[in-house]
Image (cartoon, rainbow, N blue to C red; front, side, top):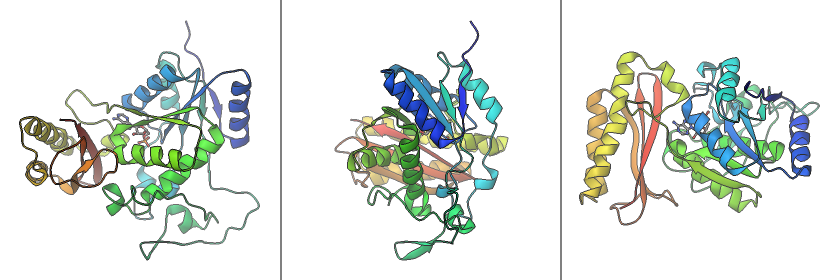
Length: 311
Ligand code: AMP
C-alpha cells in the first residue's frame, strides 16, 4: 500500500478550518510541534500521537521568537522534503504538515520595533530585532527561570508564545512533547493548566542513537571528535543514576561526578542540576522523584540531555 501523502498547509486560517472540519466529523486531533530536520526522536512523538487521536498534525517551523540575535537561528538545519518523506514512512503517516512561513507577519499592523524587559534587562529576540511589531508574550514565570532559562533568558518566553499561537491555530485535543526538552515539557504542561487550554499534554521518552547520544537536530553540526566527546553526557548521567540507585543521594557528589566526566571528555558545562521533577527546583539530596539535567557545549554546539531518577 502506498504511504499516505500528508496535506501540506501553510496558511493559518486553512489550518484552523481543517481542524474544525475534523472535529465536526467527530475526530480527535493530535499535534506534534517541531522545528524540522526530523529524526527518530520526532517520529516517536508522531507514533505516540497516533496512540491518542484519530488524526495527527505535525508543524515544522523554526521559531525566531525563541532565538536571541546572537544565537544559532541562521545555522539551524532544514530539509523540508526529507522531513515529509520521513513522516510518510511512519505507520499511519500524518494527516497534515503545518508549515507556516512566518507566524509573526501580521499584515496591516504597525512594524514598529518593540523591546522587552526580563529581570530588568532589555532583551531582544530575532523578531524584535527585525521590528515585526509583535509585542505579546506568554511567560511561565518560575519554571522558566532555572536550567536552560539561565543562559537563554528569552528562550522559554519564545517557546510558550509560539506554542500558544500554534495551539490556537491547530486547535488540537492532544499535544505530544519530548522529555528530551524536559523543562520545555513541564512549562507547556503548566501553561496549559494555568491558561485552561482544553488540551492534554503528553510527555514522550528520549530517543537515543545506538551509542547513547540523545538524538537532536543539532547533532549534525558536531565534528566526529565532538560527537565522540558528547557521549560523556549520557554515560555520566547513567553513572550518576546507578550511583543513586546504590545509595548515593548527595546531589553535590553526583553533580561533581558528571561535571568532571564531561569536562575531562572535552565538553564545556553550561549547567548540571538535579531538580524536582514537577517544580524543577534544585534539590540537595534525592528524597523524591528528580531529574538530572545537563547542558554542555562541544565546540559551537550546545547539547542538552537528562535522566529521571525515581528511587
Ligand atoms: P525540536 O524540533 O528540537 O523543537 O523538537 C520538537 C519536539 O521533538 C520537542 O517536543 C522535543 O522535545 C522532541 N524531541 C527532540 N529530540 C528528541 C529525542 N531525542 N527524543 C524524544 N523527543 C525528542
